[in-house]
Image (cartoon, rainbow, N blue to C red; front, side, top):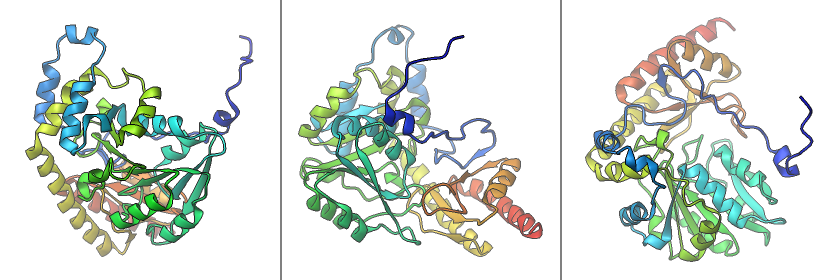
Length: 358
């Protein structure tokens, strides 16, 4: 076979490859911050009601967008549904980041911000958080220039679980009127604080939400991007009208309508998080306070051995040592209290073994 002569764009060739470890995920899934139980029973009912004929039609997103907009307290023109938050980030960056522009990114944070920005002609400017992973407010404000076009803030942040207050977000938006402030609220339900009510009032504010986490719809790939009509008119220019599939659109109303299930799951995760944090403290392992459905712990030099040993015990955790400032750290998703008690027992055994093999 002859060699391919067509090369990608230089920026694409330079992107760091990102391969999340999605294979071989049998056992207790505490590695990708998913819902660890199931979606709402109403979602399963909605899925079962989808007809074969419906599968022959291109999906119509507008009616469901209007429903989600009402749920989130914004106007229909201020919201678009996307193929997960990943597509929301991708199309936002594609619509606004141009040559000479800069994406301002406090790190460590969600890897795909850098990946999608790197596919544009913009420059990624990273601002490192301190050792306690608190939000680098002063450093971020100092890094704003006339070239700053987008500032991306995950709130709560992954992989740290840290948060930034509303007043700081407003300060950033005011200090950078020439830039969009993307506030990614993927883990909103486990935190409870939002700036969604400011959409349309703060002209450069963009808020992202996902239905993959608390709602348990990660397999359906559906998210939302909320912003002023002036921002979204450009996003819609580059957003595929068919990127949200018919099954996701059929199930989403059932998911957001079952508030009893959602509230019950979120309450269980919050209780499990508090119990897990106390147990980690009892093991003498350093951790960072989290407002999300995961906790970042410091394992140290044997972080890879720790993750492997946990996997061998049927519990998947995520090694985050390659993230900026996270050397030796492992992220543990929070499930139910019963699941986390199992995880703690495994952690206790693994840590003992690793200590004995020094």
